[in-house]
Image: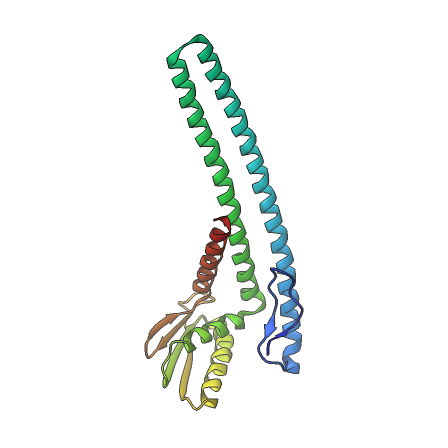
Length: 234
């Protein structure tokens, strides 16, 4: 059963637990994490509103410019027609098409800029939450990724930055405990590698190497957001 720390509003993410029982020692950390997420969500909403306002302003300017260009081109065309100059009509039409195309390109660029900025804001917000407030969640997600591909008899060597070794050890220890409780043997070794960046998580398994680093997970999130925004635009 999923337990939510607070009821999420429409289109809002919230912290939830799959376990109906919250250990006493974890309650304070969970509430702190939920408050951090709520604050970051509010900041993200404000940034998105600001980006949308700027995009709306850009679209308005583009539409005004397009209307002005159209009026100028139409006036030039009518003047040329009154003179009976065939070349004038051709030139006026060519100018209209060129300037109208430029105005449409400006509007499209404004839409793309707004969409990309919204995606970047969300990814940056998630990155800050994971790095600052919940680094253990990164490795819990990495453990879930590895769990989905390893075989029945698993031996895993996890390499992380020295500052992340404790959080990674805890997350993968929980994974090993679940497997052993299910009667599946598992061996997990978490090694510190100073050559890796903070947030890196490289797992050597029997079926190959799995890179579950924070940057990889954020790129996957960005790709999902981009597809969602592309779908909304379409």
